Length: 400
Ligand SMILES: Cc1cc2nc3c(=O)[nH]c(=O)nc-3n(C[C@H](O)[C@H](O)[C@H](O)COP(=O)(O)OP(=O)(O)OC[C@H]3O[C@@H](n4cnc5c(N)ncnc54)[C@H](O)[C@@H]3O)c2cc1C
Image (tube, rainbow, N blue to C red; front, side, top):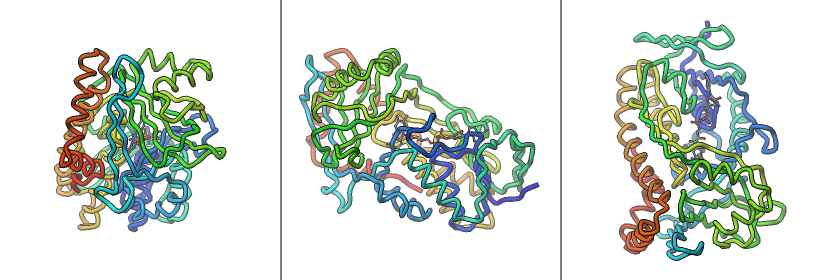
């Protein structure tokens, strides 16, 4: 039977980051995932979403030995622009900018494609002899005792670990095996994720346009085919999102032009369109005996304000600090109870805030849309409020 310090179930972006982080700090790590990572944009099943890493993510990625590989591919995000276009016509009526320069010498964050993150993270793991990455093998069973966890893998082998990290997604098998329940909110909403090129430069501004059904967000990417390029997340009620995903390219591009209020000129589709169901889901606990939940195994939020994976890095930061403070008690009840306490309240608070923003963005009744525009004006017009919101975006309230 293999014996490791940490078994990580799930090699999505969160699990890969966890393996690089704990591997770099000298822990023996086994990372497994039944689905081998897709590391090219054009390959079937590639993840065409992007991740806007907020400023605090950089230190963690540096600590994991990842930032050096990623920085050359990252588009900096200097300004976050919120546009309300909820009037009768699809045109901007309130626009508010948050400039990172108001609170920091650096940008808000950096945007990177998820398929590229997987490619660079897998390459980094190959440099770490104490990390055993087993794509094609999943976790199947979990048996825990006070001093260890025994995990059965899909290849029939068993592994003994001091700590199991569940990074195995929103339907986490390790979470289920530990009997941890979740609370799920459904919105009947889906997100389309894809990339576009456009004639008007983005100038490192991330733009979130609100009308109804959910935000239409353009996040800067490096130029593509000598044209300015952005990642788009377009949230709509489920049937409308499905209809949009099936439109012929020319019709879809016309619909995008309308929904983006022409702010960037004609948008040209640069990748295929992918569809993602939108939910909020929070686990009742962040830990159980010898088990820590991170990322979507613990919390799923709508893609607003780039919180999802950034919260996951908050989980990892907390686990790393606890592990390094007392390596001998890795995976102990005391360590995992502390992890739960430090993270759960923060996760619930952020999930509640994002749920409220999503509901406000989804509304279709005109009087409520007018109210939202007025709220945006009043709220973001007040300098201290604006500063606080920006600091929250930068994760300044994150603990652990
Ligand atoms: C449209 C959209 C845009 C987003 N944009 C942002 C953003 O800008 N910034 C941000 O911070 N967040 C963003 N997010 C959120 C972010 O994408 C997610 O938080 C992140 O991708 C989830 O990563 P994960 O590793 O937790 O889960 P997943 O990517 O789902 O990975 C889970 C892995 O577990 C594996 N698995 C399943 N079963 C087993 C098993 N039995 N054993 C082992 N492994 C198993 C799966 O194969 C999978 O590879 C966005 C989300 C959406 C939907």
